[in-house]
Image (cartoon, rainbow, N blue to C red):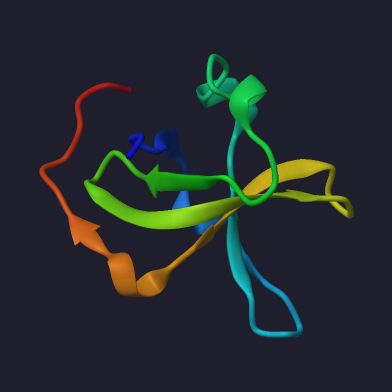
Length: 85
């Protein structure tokens, strides 16, 4: 099984749709080298520098013209903070 790509996110940039789906934007400037690998439905990991990460699924949001991650909230992992900013 292949290791999913990891994308930095800012959990302050979360959105909730009317249907209850929640997603977080994947900032392209902080994930430059990985952005070309994204495709809708791709399993990924989203994380922040404080060590909070979730399994997620990539999705392109047409309305905002941005890649987002749809986290699976049941997969929360608290890891040591990263110093790789």
